[in-house]
Amino acid sequence: MTLKFETPAIKIYLGDSLEILPTLTESVFSCVTSPPYAEQRAKFYSSISETEYPTFTLAWMDGLKPFLDKQGSVLINIRENISKGEISDYVLRTRLKLRENAWRECEELIWVKPDGPPVGNMSRPRRSWERILWFSKTTTPYCDATANGNEVKNLRFDKSQVGQGLKQWCAGYTNERTYTPPKRTRCRDYVEIPVSKNSRFKDTEAHPATFPIALAEWMIKLVSREGDTIIDPFMGSGTVGIACINLNRKFIGIDNNENYINTSIKRLTSYLEGH
Image (cartoon, rainbow, N blue to C red; front, side, top):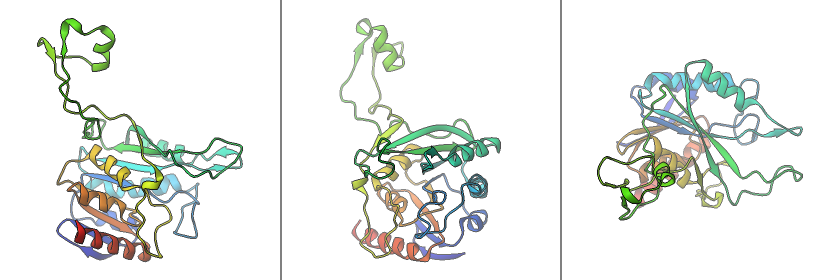
């Protein structure tokens, strides 16, 4: 384990997450990450076999568990591949493995990719979404469901004018004569963000599987507050770190690939200088 970069709000470690996570000396509020997919992109980074993936995931999450806030969450961006015409079951087996070992699966969220590339089996629909698995130590994790919602302006209902359908849509109202909704609506359980919003750092060692900063921000705002610490055990090019800077969160990043660590440090340093 090597601490490669540090500021008052950021720490970047080079090394194996399975070894580093149990040695953390500080608590984290939530984890936002996109781990290596099973047996995918092996020429770019070390991969995990589909057979070992559930055990691998449980190992790093259990390593994090003692340092995760009691109301904290783990959000995992992932989608299984299709092999020989069938959906691989390693993600399903991973979810069940975590549930069997006291992790609570709170929800499944979806990232819709309207401009997803036309790759894969040409006889199947284009794959245009990915999962965001949501786990926690508790069934009542912290969640700001309005953080990513739409702004509501001057919307009030007189109780005499509220029909049954609207009452259900609003999920109830107070005993006062009027119902005043919050300033923002609750977000939906999916988010639509184009892949083209990926902000690739212009470095020859750019990570092959970066996701949009906007997606990282959406996840972070959902499960943390300003000033909280977010960890990404598979940080790649540092996108979650950039999102943390934008949202006034602290960040801990880990990766076992020194090229990607160096790229992320360049990217974060450049971003901090211009922020």
